[in-house]
Every structure is written in structure tokens, then in C-alpha cells.
Amino acid sequence: MPTIRRIVTGHNAEGRAIIQTDAPPERIEKIGPQGPIFYEIWNTRETPARIDAASGEFPEAGLILPPPPGGTRIRVLDIPPETEDFKHISEADAREHFAAIGMADASTAVKGAPHPFMHRTRSVDYGIVIEGELVLIVDEGETICRPGDVVVQRGTNHAWSNRSGKTCRIAFVLIDGIFVDELA
Image (cartoon, rainbow, N blue to C red):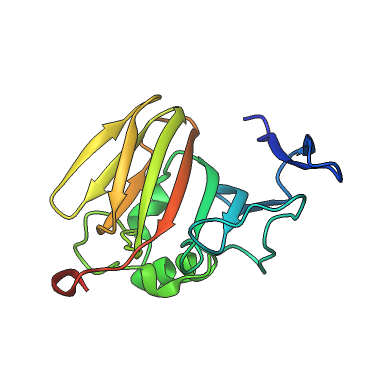
């Protein structure tokens, strides 16, 4: 798939709107030899988000799955089709996968789980399928998501499975959240 183009606006010294950058995102990372490609587009550190003249994205070391505390994150993922190897992913391998994206404790993989990459984050995520298809798997059910479909993921245990035979591109907007007592 073509590389994502990220266009960031800002303001010049006179306060007029400008195109600050127009290029691929600065952080593009592939997880494992057959894993997804993460295009890290932008993150904010607070809500409401601070708007200034021309600062850049807040720097981060490596990939971090959830949004920053009190903030947001937008990313695009290219998720390749699953191979036979997925049937043999251990709980430890699943935790290592999530550790590579900064959140080993997100993994909820246990023997008998619906998918080896089941996970849960403390966030509300909007997922928009751009190209291809993915299966959204939750504890009790699954559904196929196709281009134009929007998933509102509300801190639930889930996984994504690409059973289509071709790469799927999906955009995510992640918003920091807090679990109420009965869900914590």
C-alpha cells in the first residue's frame, strides 16, 4: 500500500494559516516480520488540546499503544492477512507483541481465547476501515468490518483478525478514558 501522507497546518509569525509540513509521518514502524505497520500520525497531551503557532507533535520513544494520559492519538495501521502461524501464538508471544507497542499489560491472551491477540485498553477508539476488511472479535461475538465502516471501541476486550487474503488499512483515533468501578 502507498505510504500515508501527513499534512500538518500551523501559523506563521503574522498569525496566518500555513501548511507546516506535508510528508509521510515521522514515525512508521513495523511490528515483527509479518506484523502490522503503524503510521503514527499525531498525539496530544491534554484535552482541550493546546493550539499554538507552530509546535510539532509531542515526541515519544517508540510505539505506545494507548493515547497519552488525558490526550489523544491518531494512527493508521496496515494489517496483513493472518497466516497459519497465528494458530500457534503462545500467551507469552502475545505479551511480547504488545510489549513491542508499549503496553504488555494490554494483552488478555489466555488459553481458549477467541484470538491470540485479544487485548484491552483504557480508551475510546474510533476505527475507520479505509481499504480491505477486518474481523472485529470480542469476548462473545465477531463481525466483519469493510471500507467505510466505523467501529466505536469502548474499552472492551477485543482483537482484529485479517482473514481476507490482502492487507487492510484502518485509521484509529484513540481518546484516553477511565473505567467506571464495575469495569475496572
